[in-house]
Image (cartoon, rainbow, N blue to C red; front, side, top):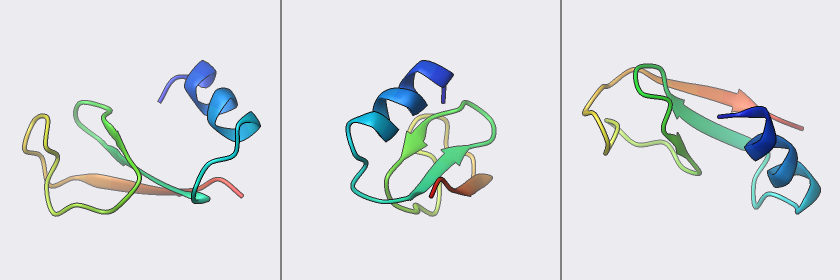
Length: 50
């Protein structure tokens, strides 16, 4: 997730303080998936933003 997207999300109020991101292609998700819907990778990172 780019810094601009992160700041925009924080300023406009995210639905959740938890963000998931594919470690391969960088796709961000609001919920944990078994595999990335973009590239199919099973390497999903979990970040707590607040």
